[in-house]
Image (cartoon, rainbow, N blue to C red; front, side, top):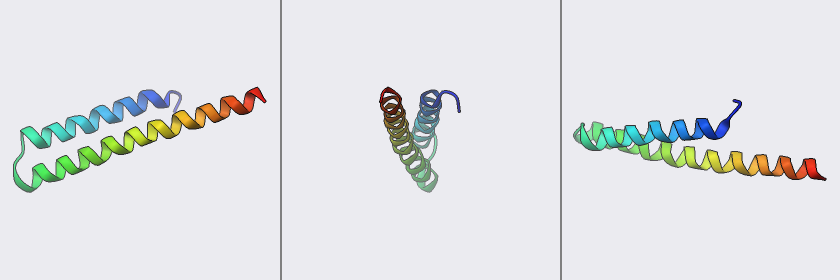
Length: 65
């Protein structure tokens, strides 16, 4: 992946859409399942973005030394 932050943004957008689809268009167990997957995915994508950012900062620090 050449641009990991772009992929992070794309995945967050997909999971937000899943979450809202579960909230608005579905009912019952399907709604709860879509909301759980959407919310979990959003959290995962944000943590992935944080991890990638920290990793790239560490690489830059190593190059400076």
